[in-house]
Every structure is written in structure tokens, then in C-alpha cells.
Image 1 (cartoon, rainbow, N blue to C red):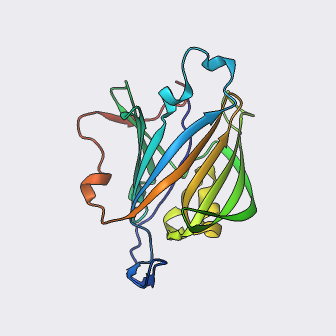
Image 2 (cartoon, rainbow, N blue to C red):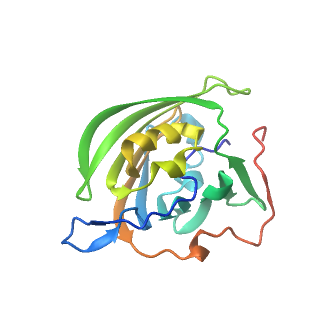
Image 3 (cartoon, one colour):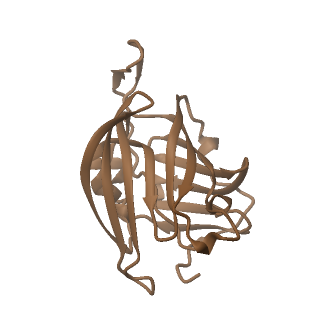
Length: 229
């Protein structure tokens, strides 16, 4: 099973402030906190007749973010099925999967995908103003060449990020996408050949995030991701 891409990069902390939309209280210009998502599936093909995609890919997620680093934990029936960590200083994503005894990583400045995107429309989610992009990625290397992933991703500038954090994040075209969107996603619709999934935010928390919440587990060995397996 191949992994998909997610988000951020490079260390730059700017302590400018802006007024939030809830009544004049000052907050850091860049988002720090947690976003909670529900994950649903449709158009499920015969390949999943013996197991639901949610059992592998989760039915909810908790995305913890600070200064371009993040931990995206995905659960099924409240049990962790995968976690994806972003260490921006290393330009790496670390992947932890249920049932695997190692944590694997890959460099986000490398990509086997060619990615194009278009701006579709504006909308509101959880009372945040958003912009929706249609993103088309095609795998251009290795034995899976030609495999495609189409997605519709809805970003909000109210959950601001610094595009500089993504300047080396070529995987999934995020170095280009965040120059346009400037904020984190609240809805992610992935259209694959065997299913369609939608991650929809149900809650946003602006809270201080401690270093320990973004740290890798220390009880598993770490190795580079093997695209051949």
C-alpha cells in the first residue's frame, strides 16, 4: 500500500498578531492547535467486499499543528490505525501504521507525482471562509506509473500558515498550493478508483501545542520508506 501526501516545512517563527473573527481577541497570525475531522466513504468497489475502507484508513482524524510541524492521528472505532508526523527541519514525513513494528519516513522534496490544480470556488465551513481547489496528481515513476488521484481540497486562510514552511514540499505540489491558499484544509475529498473519501472538519481548537505532542514515538525503530513494498 502506498502512502499519500499531506502538509508543512522550514523553521520561521514570526510573532506578528491579528484579530480573530470571534470578538477582538488577539491571536498569533499562524494557526496553532488541533483540527478534528470525520471521515466517510462512498463509491466503494468490490475489492473491499470483505473489509470496509475505514478499518484501514480510519473514520476520524485529529490533526495537531504548530509552526509547520504536525501529527495527524487517524482512528477507527477509537483505535489508532495510522499516524503521520511532519518534521519540517528534516523535510520528512514519518509514517506509523497499525500492525507494523517500524516507523518509516520519506523526504518531501522528492516526489513521484506530477500535480496540477485549479481554483474552483469559495465556500464556508464551520463559519470559516474557504477556497476550494481541484487537484489532479499522476504517478510518473516506478511500476505504478499512470495511477491517478483526484481530489477537492477546501482551505481556509483563517487557519493561516506561512508558505515558506512548504518551499521544499514538492510532494503533492504543496510548495505551490500553499502560496495560493495560505491556510490549512477543512475538507479533503479524495477520488480514487476503488473508493471516494471525505475528511470534513467538525471542530477547530486554537490551543498551545507542546513539543511532546509532535514528537515521534521512541519505542519503534525508524527506517526509510521502501516504495517497493
